[in-house]
Image (cartoon, rainbow, N blue to C red; front, side, top):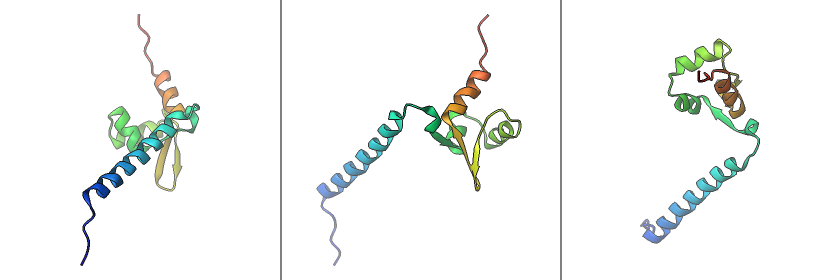
Length: 92
């Protein structure tokens, strides 16, 4: 007969998972050099609220720098910041 875990144990495991997630996020935010932070294509698409085809066009047109490992596309946060700065419009 299989035992059902006690509700307290379920809560503890849930809390441990949340603490692990927050610790990972904290470590990422502690990185001072944005060149070390990578976003994948899904993050990039979500950040700019664009389609996958638009992201592909930007890469093909050389508008955004990226790295490709096998089929996976990565963008350095520093390159994204540079992309934004290059396309910034000044107030008149």
